[in-house]
Amino acid sequence: MKQGTTILTLDNGYHLWTNTQGEGDIHLLALHGGPGGNHEYWENFGEQLADLGVQVHMYDQLGSFYSDQPDYSDPEIAAKYLTYDYYLDEVEEVRQKLGIDKFYLIGQSWGGALTMLYALKYGQHLKGAIISSMVDNIDEYMVHINQVREEALPPSAVAYMKEQEAKGNWDDPQYQKYVDVLNAGYVDRKQPPAISHLISTMATPVYNAFQGDNEFVVTGKLKDWDVRDQIHNITVPTC
Image 1 (cartoon, one colour):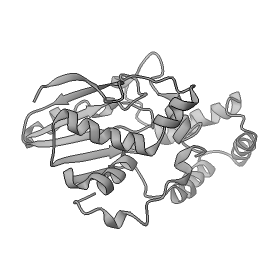
Image 2 (tube, helix red, strand yellow):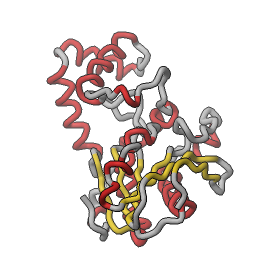
Image 3 (cartoon, helix red, strand yellow):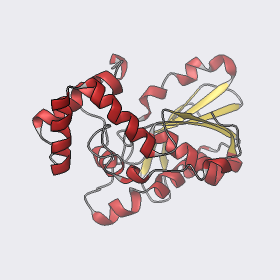
């Protein structure tokens, strides 16, 4: 199989950036988080897994930095592509166009959600699944993340954040300063310089549609995330 970068043309006409590293009979497809992040933290997986004979495939989802970025300000485009169903079926189309089957799927954060959904709908193509940093329901996540915020910030700061959130004042400068503090301590703790950029690479429209303004509130479509009643139907080995 071709090594390095390949640009896939999807059936919808958009293009996705993909990259394949390593050689071997074991195929691992890696799904990035965000939503709206990119592949970069998977870049050395091929090298790290070389002695195991693993070929690692990664790609940037539609809207993400290296792939096509639709005009999500168009309501019709947003309604069509900013959905769970679109991103789930995109994984399957990427699998088909890369020509892999009986493979392992790993997903981090948002990618972990897609991994669960893929195992439920397309599990016949999997040998196994790996879910990293993702929960099966959002309610328990919110309990934890609110506890983190209350322990990390003084009560006055938490109260201020909640006040701005109730008003929808996401651009409030002081609010964003608190978000930066929380991100530095609990989200981007290592802040690896190897994948730093001079500009933001986050696909903000995608992130806002599913998550919201930041990791400590969920106002987008993920606020309804709950597959607790379905995960028992995943039949492939999963960790």
